[in-house]
Length: 479
Image (cartoon, rainbow, N blue to C red):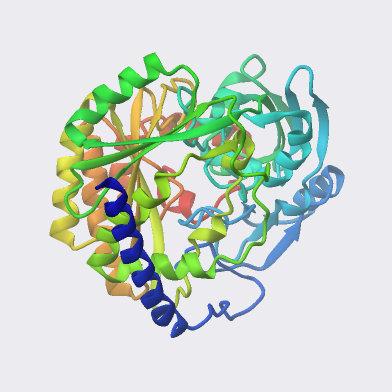
């Protein structure tokens, strides 16, 4: 009987894929945005900002001279994956860090590496993989620059780890006058913990020293369950499965009461994927059209939950840890962003508040007719030190992937449900993540991040002329 069910599901899948081939064939290829070379877009393409110059950073001496002779506001850009004007300011200069991407020191025995801030995680992985080493903490996708990830205090699916700050040993910061500060938990710790998660508001991160870990083989496991059972299940798994490396759990629209938990545990079994790292530059147009299909039709969401993923997860899958940590964000890029764009939001709630928060979230999404493709749950341990910490206590992290229109009315609608979600997270003692669109009110921001007052005081000390800024800080930094 089980074999018959599998073959029936496979037949349904093949039929749907055939229809998708016809459906997707009609789609146009994406058209790059037009405009002046100094018109800066983030990945959402919803917030173009005109800047006077983009300055490619190549070495510290030239950068210090440029900062000293230039005038006006300075923003800092890497991969430009933040979605709320964090890398640009109107009529300012953007420092493009992507050409500032060298390894400065590497000790494979101590499992430590020091790299310039413009290096992408994918570049770092290609340096350390031959030494059977892996990144200890990073986000799911490897395209981002390391300095950008430090600036947002990123996190990923790493079990028992939390924010990136937990793997940062030291960093160096250049101020507007060219002065360089050596920062670590032991040296100028308050500034160190303000720069991490400080969104480029205090200076230019020059380089970062990271603690690495061992590469290993990991095997995928999954389990479906009601949301009501998930928190207790996860706590048990953490205790009983100390070899769990990656974990996330997906909530399915429209009810968000069912969870699919996906974990990757260390194993000695042979790999089923021979590649040690994902190749960069693959063609993901088919995946993009599949995402559009899921967004366009309720049936697409149902098929994903009940047909596509169950078929995929039946297979025994063993990857290298580095392979599972080297995904290309291009797989999320839609066919076009002309009429619709895809965005992310993230909310952090205390572990005992997960279920009531999700119930409120489902109500908000239904009330505002939000086109949610996926909500992914991660876990993070407490980060009590960074000044703008998003996890001062242990939290569950809920990442919302959604589609919205690109017109002003759609943006207003997105702001409305986003503000309702921020209010809901604050109400349960939680916070929201800052790299995304500037929908939250100034009052909501200060409620969620009370450390902003001290951050503003440090900025006055380190950057008294307010040189380092961006559209995000233009809205939220206390005047």
